[in-house]
Image (cartoon, rainbow, N blue to C red; front, side):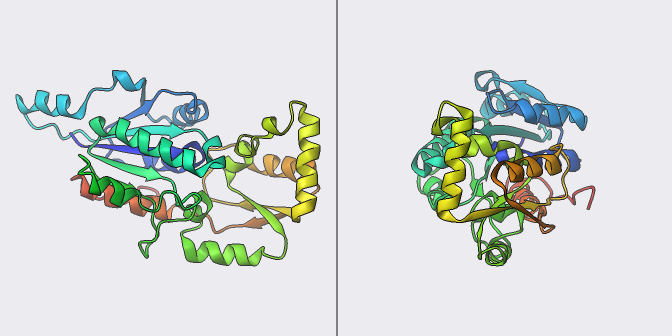
Length: 281
């Protein structure tokens, strides 16, 4: 019974929903219960994806499942196990790395393979695959890479299709500081920036952030259209952010699911599942 675990920052939950909705080979979806899944489980329900939400201690070990089915017949059921991590970890790359590695160790007993929906993230996850291979890890660990086999820089790099496209995008907005917002970023920027830690008074926190923008030259927010509509009110969230900080709004239509689909498909093959075309391509 192959089980692919997807360990992801919750900022990329829409891409996971897209995979789950469009891969007809999936027989079962299990979501690890924690404080990061509230929006995610609502999206799964909205698109009618059947799933279980279980605390990690209630998920059966892969070895127990395989032993059980060896006595009968080989189980061909394909399960995707989703573990979402908090957004605020990006503020400290070292803590992010430690938490990602810790959760990979936690997921190993349940997994035929672990696909990590992160990028370099401050250059701390560049050795993740070799680190676990070197330690004779019981299952393959893979991270998001572009078609030139380069680990993506971050979630924006993954969303726009890899390093080359990302560099072109950054160059196009290089004349002024610009926030790049995917749909989930537009909803999660307060958590990412940890606005509540700037000041206990929200109004004063916003004033401090405005002052910081003036000092470092941030003037714009760019809307990155991904083609996914699981996160609602994207336009409204962008406008709200722009109005808060008197920012100009830019818009780019180069978001896509290419890297997510490619990396997911390769991991399926690696754990013994035939690679299938995404239904809605």
